[in-house]
Length: 193
Image 1: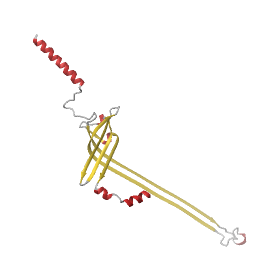
Image 2: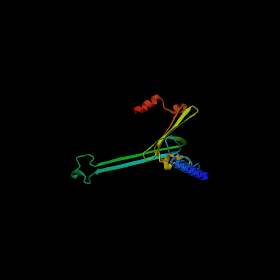
Image 3: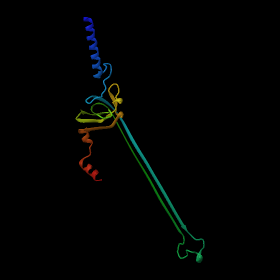
């Protein structure tokens, strides 16, 4: 009778553990942890390449030629009252305009951001800043946007191209930046013109 009682206790313990495991969302120890809650960390691989070019060309040409003359000499000439009774005129007008613009930018980095919120559809709102100080230069990369959890890879990384409403700000401040910045007078003249 004692063994039946122990068997029932073991069965009750197994049922209790199974119910606890199903309600507590226990992750497998073999699964890679992926960001899915506020406060979780997520690594963003920034690989941004942007380029734009625009080219425009305009050409116009206009030619006018007028000639008035007479083959009848003397009194029968219609234009006899004009000393030089032939009129020859030529007008040329040409315009050529060419314009082109080109711009390209590239940013490659890897940084970890934090999940700061969740949208109603389940997307994760991420935000993070990474600051570096190298030889007196302060550099900062600021990233924010929203990520669909399905786009997060098994190693808890996401490509910057998979982030919606992505904002990346890359700034630098220091002696090198100050040295390349135009002076006050030049900036004032550029502001006026």
